Amino acid sequence: MLRGYLGRLFKRKGVEPFVALKNISFSIPAGQTVGVVGLNGAGKSTLLSLIVGLCPPDEGAVVVNGKVAALLQLGAGFHPDLSGRENVYMNASLLGLSAEKTEKAFDSIVDFSGVGQFIDEPLRTYSSGMYVRLAFAVAIHVDPDILIIDEVLSVGDQAFQSKCNAKILEFKQQGKTLVFVSHSAATVQSLCERALWLDHGELVMDGEAAQVLEAYEGRGRLAAR
Image (cartoon, rainbow, N blue to C red; front, side, top):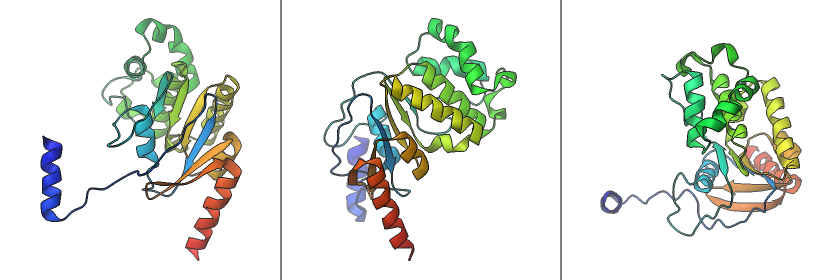
């Protein structure tokens, strides 16, 4: 009802609804690591949200096989007034991990995140980097078949980013699937065999990471002239 009302409202005012993605079609085989590149507003985060199931597509279908863990937005799945410890249990539960399994993994989660001395402090006292470290630590301990990551890892310091990259390589060796958005061509180049390039909601190129990045960066250089 609300959607229909908003549709009529837009029509009366002559405003066209914004289409974040259009004519997108691709499949990702199990065990592949795929980077998604594109300028701000290209539709990258919307694509990840669709894969995770946070919002349904208006047309078409998204089919996902396997357990999914996602890091999409800084602080998503956390409550700032709860302690780090409480947030670990809450976030792990949202990702499908039982309280018993979270209890067994808790020490390892905290150790990986490196926030041990602050684990009983309210999350609102954490820096953005600490948020990400704790969120990533929980996500990887859920042992997902598919890991979805938005640009949030860029918030962490260099040491933690290296730690995350090592864990992602370990995931690849275990045959896990990874899809992530990054503005870092070097990261996509080092971790991904495949890349998707989005522009204004459309899939411009889908192929070998090196070739897609060369074309994407070449377009950027031309636009800057």
